[in-house]
Length: 291
Length: 283
Image (cartoon, rainbow over all chains, first blue to last red; front, top):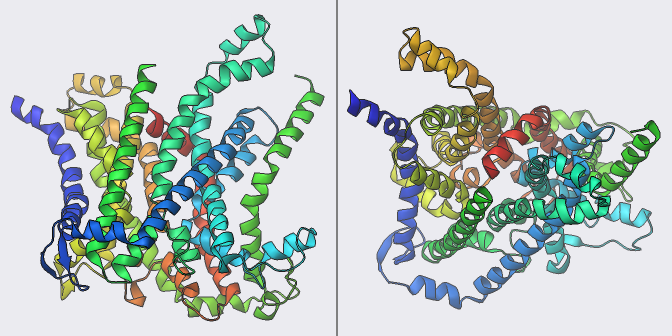
């Protein structure tokens, strides 16, 4: 009887472990195998080649430029998101008329799938018929039409903008949670001590919010680094490989170019990066809880 | 606070939010405006927000061109079954996390965290090979809705356990303990006392999982081939990808129909979500 009671909790988590083993563990094992093998385009393993796939990948200029672009993409999207989300959360934390409507509107992009958002913006930025060109021209900001998606110099910033817009709601949510956890009486104490509202913001709100901003940054880095649909739907990494980030490059290697070995190697490099960010997140959380 | 200060503050807040709100509303305006236009107005320059003629036939045209009915059924079936799978597996696990003495609880927590951080796209090649190695009927799991359901279920478990456990911890133990005293077995107390109290938490988690499955793109893109099995997201993307001439009015109508139900559902539940997600993300 006691043994049953001891085993019961393990039995309750067992199904989740088994499913994860089958759907996450086995694919991971397969990818490690592929990354070390010479694989035909139909997935036949012809022999093991050690780290040759990794060497090939790191010698590939498309990979290196995609790696660099992933860095730009992640920094720009996450940075932009935090810059937009922080003031937005601070405003939404105020008490004003129509606040719940404003919150709902700010959260709205969250409900839309990334691929649908990408399609709508692709059409909005259409060079010949799009509403963006039309609006900018009617505001007098441009004289001719811009073919936004035809060149990386304009297409990639557009993709970054869409990335920021869809990441804002999640970050606002985290920051609002942080703001509501700050007890109101410290502000009263500060005002009794003669602190101005600006000082209260500078010396109370910002430092208390910082740990939540850190968490928002790390979680966003992980999500944005992995973000596939926006770039895949809007430019498929083109024109001429000029908007590839690692995920889109990996997908193209695996399913368009038929090179499973190198694709698996890219996946594992990315997994290692995600894993190290996850560790940073664990650290931050631990510090947050002990503070 | 005086009324005039409240007016001023409200005006300032809305003013501060206006650039972001404009960007949030813009795509919806584009969707609705384009979806209602006949194709000659869609391709006219300069485009106008309000159509001269409302093209009601876009609806029927799009429905046929995208085989939208069967795509809706596929999305609905896949999302519901994936949600049921994730919930059925996550509820017991979350109960163990929140209520029982789980050996190696920290290890399990880290396992959840790591699986939550793994996005399917990083494993997509392995997922494809996994599906190809499982025989089912005449073929394998590749190009089956069942394979997609299994993968969606698995990738949503970490989040569901996380969210459910943080809610479960807020349900008071006293009621269950009182039931034991009245001679109820532990299982009986869980079924009759605990689960009814947990219904709101389970519904919120189920809806988030449903929305995630409904919106998913990468796994469906990789696994599904047969046009009759495609989900709504894939169908809509296929109306655009690789086409020489795109019927943008149909595409926008399709994105609108794919988006609106989920957006409405999400907007009404947003309050609960904010609570649950911050619990999950921060605590």
